[in-house]
Image (tube, rainbow, N blue to C red):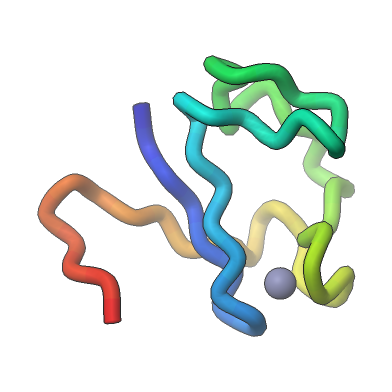
Length: 60
Ligand SMILES: [Zn+2]
């Protein structure tokens, strides 16, 4: 499972947790999210613009 971060507001989508209020249950893979889905927090960053966080990535 990977995580993806919005570079604008810092919102993180975690595949293991999903985003239930967006309609994505826990375990929803990033690949299954529509490309036109936008960040639920800032609404200005779309899926292709999110940054992938690897397990080795240190969050700041
Ligand atoms: Zn955002």
